[in-house]
Image 1 (cartoon, rainbow, N blue to C red):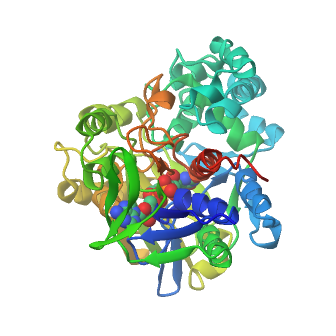
Image 2 (tube, protein in one colour; image 1 turned 180 degrees about the vertical axis):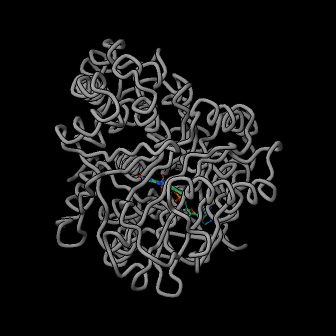
Length: 498
Ligand SMILES: Cc1cc2nc3c(=O)[nH]c(=O)nc-3n(C[C@H](O)[C@H](O)[C@H](O)COP(=O)(O)OP(=O)(O)OC[C@H]3O[C@@H](n4cnc5c(N)ncnc54)[C@H](O)[C@@H]3O)c2cc1C
């Protein structure tokens, strides 16, 4: 019987995944979450008959969740219902153009034909290109702890990495897409996938063109009852596996001595642990929780964070038949929008708006004849050039005006409003500079620069979450929890028992 103890800092997806996997192996796991509820960015707000998810609205790679349940000896289908959403997204432009995107290739091709016959013909080739990137990179970059040289220095991996041209790291996302599509609106649809991990399509390597394959071919889903169902479920599983969950417990310090972790200081009290899994952002952990190691701290603070976001949770009277579960209202100049977001680090004048409405799929998420709108605009990460007080007033007006142009004059219909700014994202989740997805992938070497799951400075300290390998988003964060748990098991000589 394993009697080693693990202290987990944070009850986000990464922390919960690692906690479950380690508890299953008999470790004594205690999880400390500073907020009232578990889930971190994947949370919910309930008010006056409205229910909102505050973070993720789209689930990709659902098999990562299935695998976790399988590992725990359970069948996910008995616990959570994944529903494919069709159309997967509805796109709107200011000039009245509209496109409904489908996962079924024939339907998607037909939809694209209304905008560009030539581009529609290239859809299949584009998805084959995207699939090839998946085939060459998924095992190495998503399912392997890349910083462990022993794990990537093998014949199979090196053989794949030699096909560097097909992995496409030397062009940008935008350039890679330009090889298949020419119409600016179609290009914009596929450029947008770079924002799935908070990056800039005009800078990020074309390797990120893997994402359309993940969305269109592997599928995109909604978790019936709301995305937060996943967290509610993981909480119950933690209780079943005797993970000690402590909410409203703030970890102040990771205790270490002579390069080895020995415990945590929680609201002033010191508790000993054999291992620490930190689900808090790596950069803010070095800034706030770890004493010493100034060189690493400086290095981490130089890395570019991902995009932040401004979120409006709106309870709206009326039902809008022309909207789907997922909707995008595109800016007129995408390049200019990203120039503002990443270069001048200012609020874009004409922001792209994402609207997710779960009451389209679960009518009880809003009162009768009403809808629950989750509205998200990309924002720069927190920076001295930027001020939410000024941006916030401008942005709300810009969003409402843009929606009005597309026929959704909703301002007078908003009966509930809750706003989450980049500053709130920082305060609530301790996310470096309010970033949503950890570090940006705007450089070719991002995958390697992202901090490792096993900390090199302090033995026994591991990281799981969006700011560590393999990156942000539900499936990747859960994979980081898996990689971290596996590394601890290996360290204990337990290997992968299941
Ligand atoms: C608006 C928004 C939209 C998104 N949309 C999608 C989407 O559609 N699809 C998708 O796949 N992903 C999406 N994401 C990304 C996804 O939500 C995140 O990648 C994921 O939830 C992050 O999980 P995490 O484990 O890294 O940590 P977090 O969720 O950041 O959790 C970390 C936890 O640690 C706690 N903590 C921090 N410091 C301490 C401390 N000192 N003591 C105790 N506790 C502490 C925090 O309170 C927090 O609960 C979205 C995110 C946001 C914000």
